[in-house]
Image (tube, rainbow, N blue to C red):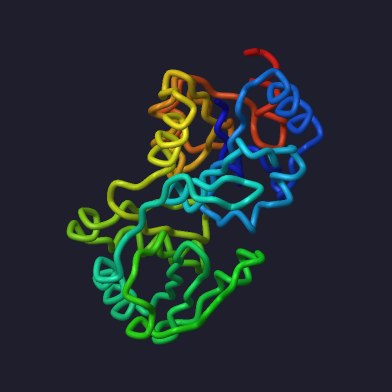
Length: 262
C-alpha cells in the first residue's frame, strides 16, 4: 500500500496532481498496489483528486480527517471512525475565548464555525463541498467530532503554539497541517490510526506500507511505515522521522521515488 498526504506532498503548490505523479500512481495501481490518499479534509473536498487517479472501485478507500474516518470511496461507506467528544473540547473552547482565537469543529458530515468566538476563515480556505453550520459552542450537538481547527494568519498560530498548556498537550494531538491551519485531534489520533484499520482490512500491517508526507500531521504514518518518504520541502524534524527523502512536491517527488523504487 502507498499512502499519500496531499498538500505539500502529492499536490504541487498550485494544488494540482502533476502528469508525472498521476502516471506513476496509475501504473502501480494497475500492478495491484493500493494507493490511498491521506488527508485532514473530508472526502468531498478531495473527490476531484480521487477521480483523477481512478480510485473509484469498491475496494478503494481514503483516510480523512487525519485518521478519524476511513471511508470507502464510491459509496462513502465508513470502514472505521473514531472521534473526540464535545465535553473534551471545552478546554479548547475556553482557550480560544481567552485568546481571542477562531475555531471550527468538524463532525463526520459538516463543519460548525463557532459563533461566540472570533470569526474564522476556514470555510474560505477549505473551499469544499461540505456544509457549514454556524453555531455557538453551547448549541453544537453533544456527540463525537473528528477534530477542531484553528484557521488564521500564520504568525498568530505561531503564537498559539507557544501558548498551548501541558494540560492541552495531554488532552489533544495538536498538529500544524498548513501554515495557516492548526488542528486539534483526539490525543491518540493521527493518520496511522486510520491506516492501521485499512491495512488490517486487507490482511496487512505496517510492513506493507509506503507513506509519503511533509508535515506534522504525517508524522505517525512516516514513523510506522516500512518505507517513510519525506518530501524535500518538508521540515528537518519531519525528515528525521522517515527512511528516505525525495524531491519536492513541485519537482514530481512522488513519481521520482516510486519509479525508482518499483
